[in-house]
Length: 254
Image 1: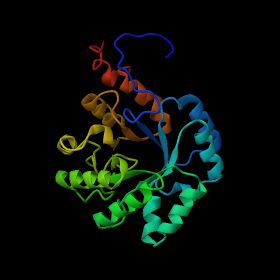
Image 2: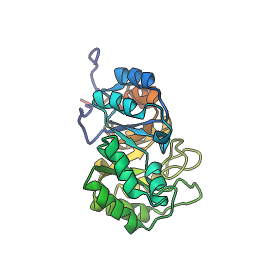
Image 3: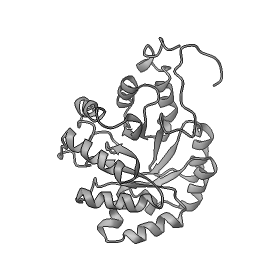
């Protein structure tokens, strides 16, 4: 850091598995990526190329290389996995991962209907090739999944080979873990945490008030995802109690 302040929470250092930050790239240019990694590489752990944006992204291989050269792994959003699966092209999906030398993949079923045991089979198969992140929750705001089902699915996916499970929120933060207003479904989160270790969960939290809520609940080293590139440093100040929303929260930290 640029100077010394007392009573700042200790952040885990890269490579980390706790205090993990996943950034969503929804279409940055190569030049924007170069600027982004110059300013933010120390704070971002992985970048997701949102949903299926990789299909239409210009100079995709060169863009991935900029992230990789900065020590930041990249993966394609789970919707791309679903797009291949629904078209009976799973083997083609594996070839795409290999073509771009990706070390991570996301398995989700937020846009398609899939028996959960089938989803776990995909996780098991992919986990032999790459590190798997699997997403739980629906992108349909009208589909409310009870807490016990979130827990069952997260547990089964971790057992099938997921490195971490992701709590669904979409890029807007208005489904899954959240109500359509963006308010956290507090009871859901608290019930999940009674059964699933917090270091195994990445909470999608694109909105500032959601990030603040999770930092206050679980501390500076909570795993958060779907962070917009321009919100990464602001999030880091929330984690450290250096923004008004968490300013008093860590003052007792030694």
